[in-house]
Image (cartoon, rainbow, N blue to C red; front, side, top):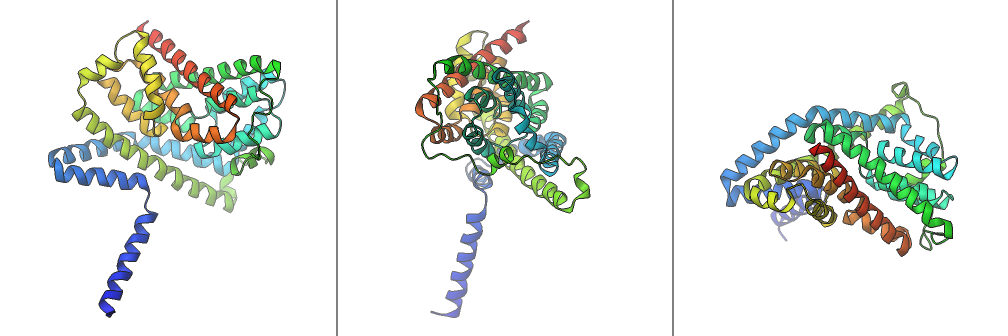
Length: 350
């Protein structure tokens, strides 16, 4: 084999290695833009401009949310969650719902955290309150929701997260009295990984994190990770929103999900389960739907139901708990999301 062939194969292997390290979200975004450039050049230009414009507008909210997440990690404030699960069961339900809606936990940390709480003997009612509220809202999500959908919608989503947690917690508390929900974890499930360690090993919070070199490194690392995570999903979301606005007739959206009845809200609740990809990416998507005639209550139901019962989250829950607990989790999530949509729709009409 000639030296030229060896060099070419080496270059090809290097390119392949680099591609495998590229994030799939960025690859999908690039693939969509490339396809548009070939098949619909004018739409490619319009979509790129739309995406860039919206990214610039959301940038202040993005920077604040990234700073918040990085600060929570660097100070150890995310460890405060352990304090929520102390006291009577009813107090734990209340604190679990509040902690779930306000804590800056990422979705990858929730499942091992739940496993740790259950393995430590925390009542399922309190864990369920945290479990249902946590994927719906956190401080970063609140800031970005305010930027994309407005403060009123962000406030409603926060209240929906807390309400969903309380609803699920008290419902499980009532059902568990007969002992029907004992031993919720599947056989062989331990007490969690990285997320669970935050509960098992309580550490003091250091608010002046910049005085510690390791915490400064943690702040930078988390800031970069959160920033890239949000940037990639929002870029893809705004790109998809541009295509939705260009190609999906507004009349279809208004006819299917518009109006003041319960049918659009019920439809959005059910559609949110398979259609939901990522909480941050869903914000521009819902914003575009509302702009085309989607009912506000349906938009909230879509976001809440999708956040709790998205397919990746549901599969993780299925692997963690026994089937009766999984079915209860889905039933509480869907019914609570539907109720939140109904209440918000009523509020919007007042």
